[in-house]
View 1 (cartoon, rainbow, N blue to C red):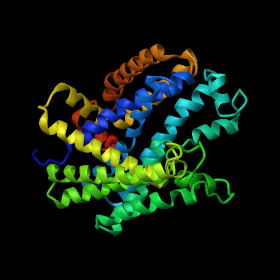
View 2: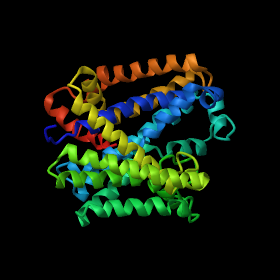
View 3: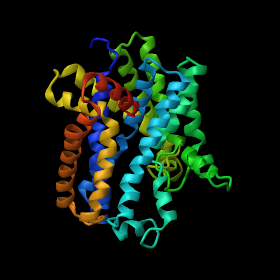
View 4: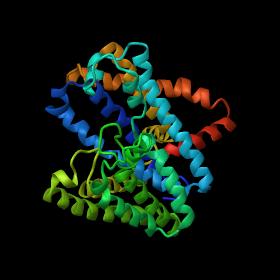
Length: 369
């Protein structure tokens, strides 16, 4: 494949992943417990969910390929992403509570008593989603990139984070505000789903491969073959550790230990190699172009799908559907999300070419997801 600034395999994998996110979230919000835990659909969707690190590996690769990697720009990008993340939390959680459309059983699922209190709403507003992870990570990425151009530094830090995560999980100082920041870094509770420890490891691995890619004159064949070899090795090592002590090394998906982090890193590197094989062997086509389109708009698509899925609870309820209902809703939310993106957000943010280029620079910050 001809060398190019944009890596089509990364765009393909990321575009596919953002569509899979809609499927996962629809199941979580609308599928009843038996459907989520005891059906082919639940098992399949939970397997799909293991692809989240693809966003993060892609974020690391894309960061190294961006023209401006200064600390100042990283801070600006971080603030943009953090603002988007908390706006999303307000729209998907707090607004429905304020207007009275949030189902009581959703509030009760937190262990609270409906109706939600101010403290409950503050808790939901502060939820640590993947956008919060991306924002905080960008701050660290700018620092790392400024002080070292050695590709092994991100890799070493990634390994250190993976190894020590379980030892610092949940560490707090008992100081309001400070504890929330520590939760974003290494929280072990459910107010933060994607803590920097261990999820930043995947971004750092992406930075390593991105730097290596540039060293090899942006040779797709070379770097993706190395991703394959590294992915297989990491899957063997991580899988072995999880087999030895699953509770410690994997635990639950959102609070991974060393083995789980290593295994998922390998799993997603192999998927990256598969994506490169697809774009290398299959002629350009409309489906690939559609996935590239989704990749470039991953931030707004991600926000949109979460917001409308949560708003839909006011009409459809929370965890009320079996397999057939969930499948119908998956199709509905995929269509709705893409319609809103195409008919509203593209026009709102891209009324002319100049503005298109500006907004895509912003949107590509989590294209780096």
